[in-house]
Image (cartoon, rainbow, N blue to C red; front, side):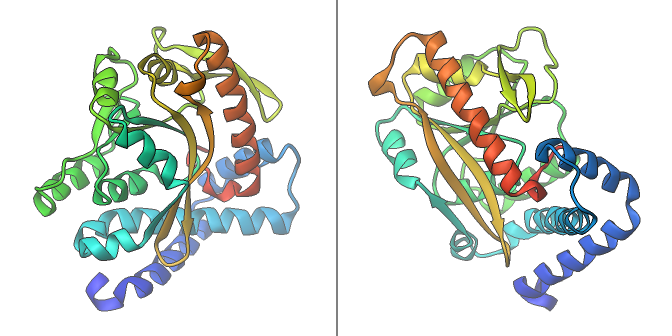
Length: 277
């Protein structure tokens, strides 16, 4: 299909496919409607709800399509589709040889951004739940065959011991994870209570604490897809600067407060990018 339609044609096909899904998948429409009302803090109008829900389905389908064809693109072409706003903060940290922690949220396609970061030459690691989707395992196998010269993205499980996370920071990795979990799955996971969308919730703070102990910068980022299979990593704020390090618990509380405020602002601005509904 990529050869037949070209990249732009495939993008248009993905949006059409997403529109069909929007028409027939009423259960997921209901789940997204509930998530939309929760993050907006009000009941959206019928037109607002219809527009946001359709865009959600279209964007989700396009992200999955791109994930499945990115290894078919020439490396230079794939890299040209990805930009990093605030790249200097990441490059400075990596240049010091101690890595950087990018605090993400369930907002935007992390799997796409991780592969494109690898193509850009970064060593990338992600902290995620132990439940692995079949599509990710399939794409990792394809990636290994297509780009054997590149190291694959390392996957660290949230319920495992943190020694691998310490090693990643020591080896200069860009480590990313979403802290805004809906529930804490394991009692050994470190959490911090924050107020977000009018609710008091427990967000994961384990990787943040490890980053602070390793003396690596912590930045907050959002993955923003654009038209034509273009993606942007938006670095919005430095949550922890090792040059101004203080007491760990105070640094964690301050970073989590800023993190929650940014999540509220960005998610309400573009709720169609929610990835957990």
